[in-house]
View 1: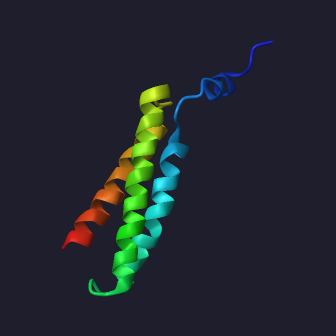
View 2: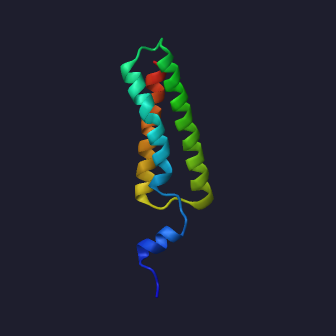
Length: 95
């Protein structure tokens, strides 16, 4: 008996939208801290730390994609969204 197409796709081990979930979760404190604090506070430094963590997690996500390949359009959409949010936060932190 062969598994349904969805299960077969899951068994291939390709990187999915979950690959980009951790960087998005790690950037949430950065969004909150930059919206609520002044650039001269220690909280702003903490925001940079969370942004750096998000950037590292994006790099880890890309290593998974390079190793295993991407699973489909939803994975690439989440990837674009994650990169957009982190890029937007970088611009916000720098200005």
